[in-house]
Structure formats: C-alpha cells, structure tokens
Length: 110
Length: 114
Image 1 (tube, rainbow over the protein chains, first blue to last red):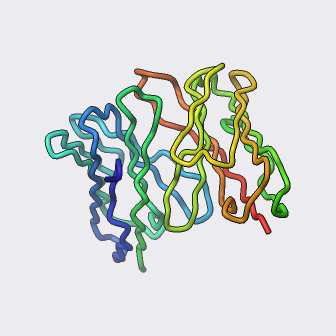
Image 2: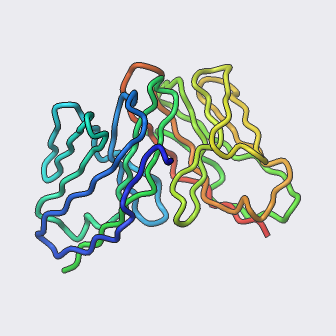
C-alpha cells in the first residue's frame, strides 16, 4: 500500500468554481502535512502547511482528519492560474522522510 | 535568496558514462534529499541525508551514490548511466526532526541518457 494516495484527476472546472481534493495517508503516526503545487516541468512549491485545526490562506483551505487519515484542499473562486498539479505530502513520524502523493491535476477553463 | 541550487540544469549522457549532480542550499538546513520524477510516477526518494555526516537509502537507490560534502552540499553520482535513469532530478532541503517544516526544492536537473 502506498504511503500517500491521491486521485490523479484531471479535475476540469470553469473559472470561478470551487474544487476540492482529498488525499489519504497510511501511517497513523505521521506528524506533519503539506500541500505543494507543481507546474509543468517545474519544481514543487509549497502551497500551504496543514494544521490540525484546519487553516486558510486566501482562496485556499486545508483540513486534516486524523481519525480517517486524510487531508483535503479546497480552492474557491478558481483562477486560470490555479491550473497545476497539486501534491499531497506527509512527513514521517521521525521527520526524516517526506512521502509524496502522485498528484492531482487541475485544469481551470475560461 | 538562492535557496536550493542545482547544477547542471540539463545534461545528455551516453550509456555507461558517469556524472555527478550538484546541490547546494543556503538556508542552514540540516536535512537534504534527492528525488527523481518520471511521468505518471510522482516523486521518488533516491537518497537522503538527515544531517551532516549521515546518508540513507530511499525508495530507489540502485545505480546511485551520494555524498554529503558539508552542511550546504549534497551530491548525487551516477557511476554508469543507464537509459532507465533518464528523468528529472530534484534536490530538496528541510529543517531536521521535530520542526514541522516543509521541504524546499531546487529547480531540477533534466537528465537524458542515450
């Protein structure tokens, strides 16, 4: 079983739509969680950390559900520039390793 | 603000040639990582160095060696390149243990082996 699993998509949404991605992780002892954004042929860039109480950054909201072992990312009022692949990342219990999902591709259409 | 710097950005090798990919970070991070990314496969960890003086294998270490030269630098070596090692290689760094800090990535090395 993979450490981190994501729906690869693609999610095709119109501008202005709200879209949500989920990601499940297998190790209940995982300590920290992140969402990264990766544009085509570029390096992954940190979008936001995910905190236990949930957190928001502008149009982006991240949530953690430890009981069900998943994290989510909600994007409101989608922009064309949000088109990218979104990677779910989980840090191991000893913080030495990061486990990446394969990514969810988002296409925002005019 | 250089962050994580990788060299070279592009390289073409012939099968059997060797080369070293260089990575340096200026954020005083303790941990450094090498990943490869292939289409549809996501990021796979090759080797990592939790702190200066230590290195450990990741998910796909075969065919690679690493050196943590000092706190700033972590190099990846291909001793005898094979076409299966054609990939995009990313170096990353992070704070060590307990800090709950994310990784920061270099902009990658695109390697083709003919």
